[in-house]
Image (cartoon, rainbow, N blue to C red; front, top):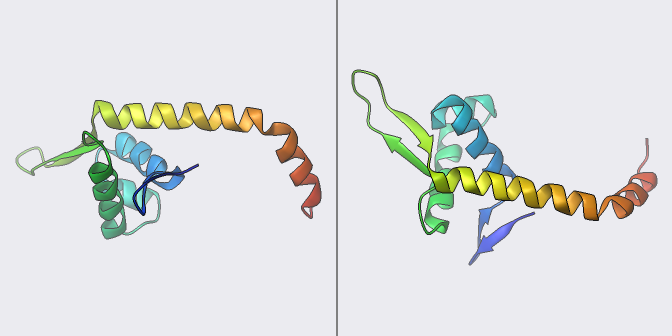
Length: 107
């Protein structure tokens, strides 16, 4: 499932997975490494997500004695929860069709 804002994917499976990884690791760079993605790609996806929302999903803090970091905002956590809820409901509603499609796929 993807939601678009103009021609940009505002929310989709890759961005949700990235947000989850940022939440787990506390940084964009660690999340990118965890997902085998370049830091630049991860940063661009976060920037697209933040630009697409009414409030940012991710905020970063500058480095310092304790180092910098990145964290999800309430909006970011809500994005994940709503997306995963919608995904579960969609899969449940489409189960019969997905089972039929699976029978058409070679084992």
